[in-house]
Length: 171
Image (cartoon, rainbow, N blue to C red):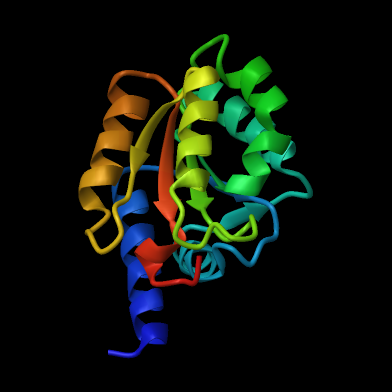
């Protein structure tokens, strides 16, 4: 199977799992990081594109407080820019929403480094957001199920960390 087909299959599988778990709406900035996932989600459920990551957090927090189950798509570079929004809108109320965070590729020399994952885990822990990692080469169903339990049953925020190599994308 070609790398291109594997990438599309992985993105579509993650898309299907997120929708089956009841996450909607999906909010994101315009990014190439999750392009295959964006396309799959947009075709099946729609993706609200906003200008900034902190805007995406604010919209998702509002939806969650109104009883919805939103998911925000972020790159690991984007989480530092929206840490204030998470700290002010999500953490104080433990707003139940999902952050889907693409890991890797944003820092030179981190292609095979655990640094992006570790930094994301540390930042999320500091912000009071539990993390679940989609392991490279593994089906995303278990990780999405765990994230759903945190968000829907425990009524807490969760971050689904998706290493780009889990999609076969270059990190």
